[in-house]
Picture 1 (cartoon, rainbow, N blue to C red):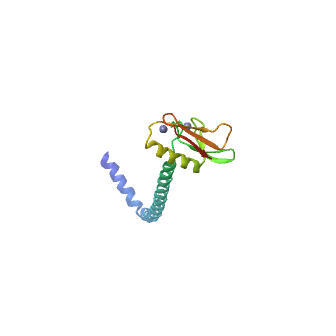
Picture 2: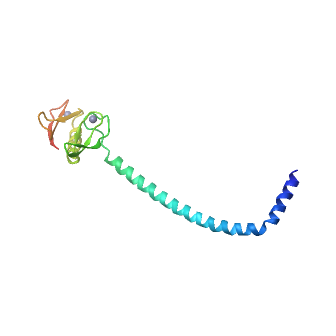
Picture 3: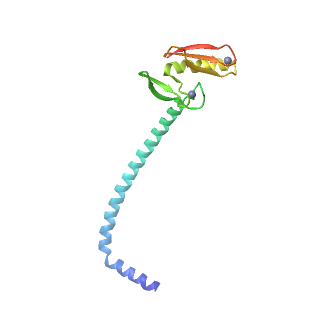
Length: 144
Ligand SMILES: [Zn+2]
Ligand SMILES: [Zn+2]
């Protein structure tokens, strides 16, 4: 059986030699094109991967854990027509420049105190953040 099938196949191949040659050259052409497309595709994917990596690196670099509750990452939001970084967990928000000052102050504070700083809007204000430590007498104001 096996031999018969092989012979049939050989016969078929013999008959379709010319067709196969044509098909082969067409196939080669296509293959070259496909290879080029694949190479382009690969390059594009590689480029996209690099861009994604840079993007997520920059996102990770910009990710700041909420200075108030430390339970969530601050996300961009708009509050009172200001673009701010807002905490989805506790509602704390601050502008980029204010956040920068807060982080600097928090770092300096961490050098001499292990207490945790609580942040909140100063009573009656919507643009001043009050920072107070639960252990030392730290008492800071930050303008949004
Ligand atoms: Zn928070
Ligand atoms: Zn303190």
